[in-house]
Length: 296
Image (tube, rainbow, N blue to C red; front, side, top):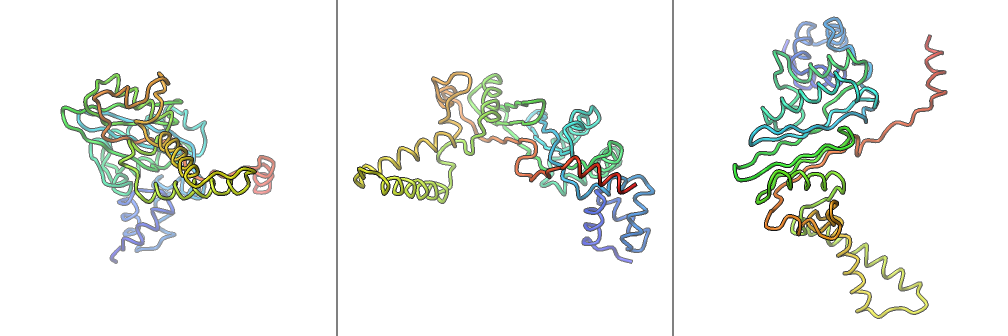
């Protein structure tokens, strides 16, 4: 029977196995999902499938620079303990290397990349089964540069966060310092020209509402022109925090990043912090132990 992409996707989400392995399983089992699941388990590919509903919010970020290409990745695990495991660290490094070489468009495409005869998704699933935790490639970014440009990369807190920048007009040392700034301070934009108009308008609207509220409660209300200056002052302060080049340079707070760069220019930047944006499950240890005891 013909195996639909929807069926392959469903089995892959259930098992964490690679696309090709899921297709082979479905073909071998005539499209039966449960039988295909067992087929993958028998092959040792879906050993970690029972963990598919767990939240993997720990893990590592990593970067790799290869000539005029660079990549930054985040691979998640369930616990920080596994993130310190040498096998997991090797998996993260392999993932980054595979991605920088192939430059896939998205995670789905990355998981189908060949790694010594297996797709990357299968390699991750097999390692998940061996380690005993849900492991997943969450995201990645690939940058390419010209010969007259330079990459700067920085890893902090043992891989808990990474930053990658592309710049021109500066040397490798400065580029790494800029990456350190991005990792530590987490700017949202390189400069003010990169801020969308709707974001600026939203900031101004919020600040105006705050100022009007304060003025209404004040014993000595300020005139409208003074309120407008207050709004612009606060907006300017917020934008300095949001924009990389306007921030105080972490190695020398007396100068901005723009001054540190001199004639140099940051063209692109990416920052990953492990688990950001993932809602972590709050565990009750006593309840967990009781559940395990009742399951026996």
